[in-house]
Length: 431
Image (tube, rainbow, N blue to C red):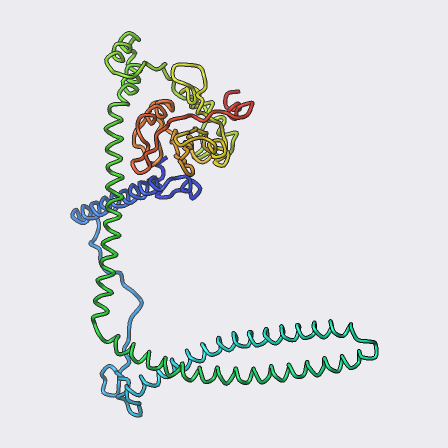
């Protein structure tokens, strides 16, 4: 799967979402490394072709675009300097007018916004006051006799007109206040912009900005270097551990291909500690043509029966029992629901719907992590995280019960998460 991604220089967004941060950093590092390799190879080929005369040296392409200068009466390039031409204003006067216009427009914009707020406050103030007065009048009006209703109505209209008059006076005072503030703000902005123009001519501020940008750039470069170093350290650590842990599986396969008898294989395993000889694995049946990626659940079930069952995927070592951590084609949400009430270090392995392989779901103290396991070849390995190749899926799980998956996360497989429902979610795979 990683080789296919590097060949196409493209990864499906859904598959990218399944990767952890460490997997994404390592995948980016590998893709950048592949870009540099292709560039160096192309440059070397071009240099060899030019040396042997198979290809002419690179030259500038002819272009239809051209530039034609406007010429003056003297035949030279026409040049106009602002403030020095006939009828031009002095540069200082033009600059003053521009600054004054900018200050006026900014002050006008701020005054309009301030007036909108002021007008809303005035409207709300008198609307609330009028509503309260109407409520008071209505409360009193019901207390008087029928003959007083007309007088109450006249009083209400008089009060309404009084409030309207006061509202108009308040609006006029508000408009006058906003106008004065606009003029004052225009003067303030004028002097502010004038001072900013004077200060911008000094080179000290530009030098400080350049130094700050340089400091940030160096800090970003150091952070990228640290991440790349951590990825390389993790790669070397897993490689050394794989030499120790993976020797048994590799030698067992070699003896099987050479036709060694079981006595020689048993003697070899007696010499290597902490491992018992696994049952012989048969190669997957290639009678069916596997698509580039899973298209449906039916295709995934057939792939599992055709390629994974002969390799005893999902079984415990040297037994016919299905491992307690193995699950069928379940979603990410279902896996997290199964792990919800378990402690940190709990895990399960489910058949992936994104790639030809599996997904290891891991319980953190707060939250979950999901690691893709590539099974498209003749081995099992984490996609983008663990460079080790394991002969069986059980070998991969047992290996990471003793060795952490990533240096940054320190994930160690501890407690398998079994089935909750009956029949189990993997029953379609073994029918």
